[in-house]
Length: 265
Image 1: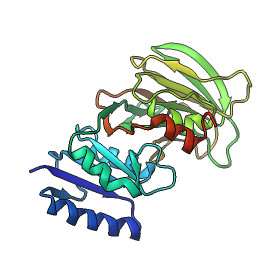
Image 2: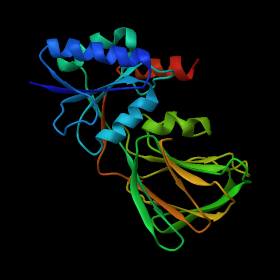
Image 3: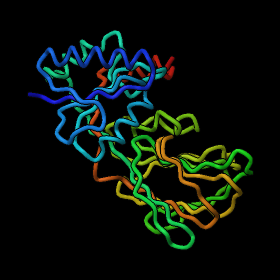
């Protein structure tokens, strides 16, 4: 008997739909679980938007359990289809008619000025260093493989995966990277100098970012869900994780790119 998980965003509509889908799938002969999930699931179905999918990925990681996103949120760029076609997509997946894509993830650790280490923390989309709401521009220095790359003033810095290249990094002027490629993207947020541009790096590179100058409220954020405060002198080290996330493909990637992000319109 196949074992399935259902994760849903916490609102009345999706909670009701999750209960209905649980009954439906159990009638089809599947064993269905809500979080916390056991280790031996065959699939996790996410009813929600991109935020729900990112949270579900964090719950599952580093286990090799495929995730199927059905969009019940606003954007749903990472999901495999809409709620209107949700049950049909689930049937396709369970019949083996949809591919599973391996998506790169990041691991980040926070190293305090005194040498204390926190982490690792996982990110499917990006690791972002952000200034506080009432803080002026911050100064960051970046090293790759132990070599100095740049020191600059900005509102922040994003290290994104290809999956995350269409999220925060894109809003900050970064490139669109096809999601199954194996690269890292370094994008500054509102840099002081106009010549500051994104940098595409090898997945074998370890990126070290040091907070050189800044005020209160500066933090490092993992997928917009895990927040860690930073003080001057602290470092964040980011690298490709050895444990990817497995997403059920959206076969209409470029159509989704056009419709939801207006690319090529």
